[in-house]
View 1 (cartoon, helix red, strand yellow):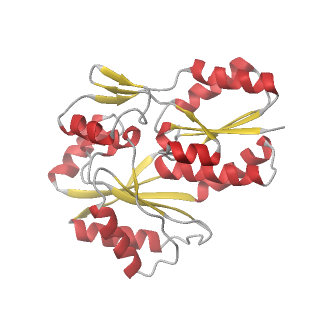
View 2: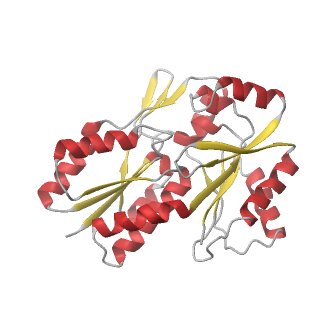
View 3: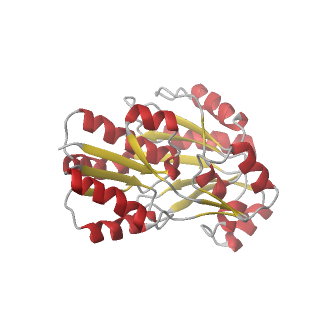
Length: 280
């Protein structure tokens, strides 16, 4: 039985990666003022940043249950298995929508994975699913492995401001106001439960980079998986952070920096940077 793998727009997967890895996309609509984009693949990032920084009200929207039902019904009719790797249920209702659609279709070959993360961390899980598929694993076997693997995937990021998390309703506005007033550079991660957590509040960009490097060093990184540096809008901070990691002699190969897409950038704002890696 063939296995189809899907992920959503929040994974920041590119069209080229989708084609190469044979991964289907669950589109998450982007509401930009009075205009709606099908997903973050249909809006140029330069346009997105112009609107966000000009104060345009930008929101992400959930995929409709009908979107999932269509995919699941097609798999059911073709007797295929489906594995969906989705943005953390602690950040979005996408996972709940997929589970609702699964109950409507009533087919055992559907496996919904709550990634407990987002951005390139979510994509890393989807890529691992593809590796397991290439090894001949069934959808059920892949899902079981992903449930274990996801806890090893870590994302650490430093934000320039907490304003956009608060604006998007992902952080209390009072917390953001205090942090911004004190000029903190918040370092965030996803908890094991998939919630965003501010793990450190640092004053000064250089100090933040050093603290970020220490956090990465404290983790036992699996060298079999390349680390993925991330940035939003501009990669200057990201490349400085990469240099800091190299000075710290981090024992892992790093990919070229990847830009965070509009779905997640809506909530973290510009000048953010970070890294995704897999723990041993």
